[in-house]
Amino acid sequence: MRRKSLLRCSAFVVLAGSLASCTRGAVQTGTLRDEVIGTWAYVSVDIVRPDGTRQAMYGTNPQGIAVFDESGHYILMTSRGDIPKFASDNRMEGTAEENKAVVQGMIAHFGTYTVNRLDNTITFHVIASSYPNWNGVQQKRPFTVDAEQLKWATPASSGGTAEVILRRLK
Image (cartoon, rainbow, N blue to C red):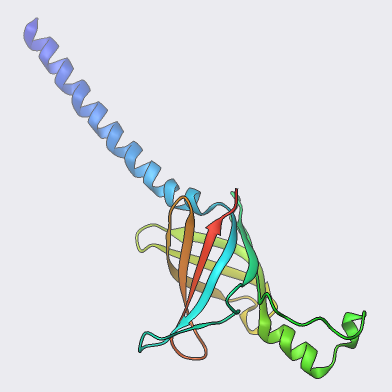
């Protein structure tokens, strides 16, 4: 009788350990993506050059928001905080200089996203962007996330890497 109890107990311990292991794996799979879900505000977007020097890509006070929802959709909008207003009250009548300031001073895109916990990457599946060359492309970015900060790196067309830092909005 004691032997049967020990065997049952041992079997239970093995089964419980297996379930706990499976549960831990399942939680880890969802946890990283769950940590990304939410609304984030831009803190900085800096070009980091190979020599370590930095340049603020959208000025020292970038404006913008990134939203990641539970169904896998996202939208990002980033802007300089100091883009000058147009002289005209009609946005369709901007001068060449005004239009250039807008194009160079902001970026927006939306689509779906996936998170890979094995290599800590987020992939943006861009549906449409204010920079049309990104329409329909996938952009894979290494990233880190915690309760308060989301950070990823993007290869910069101007050389170096764009380091994006966002803070969670509550």
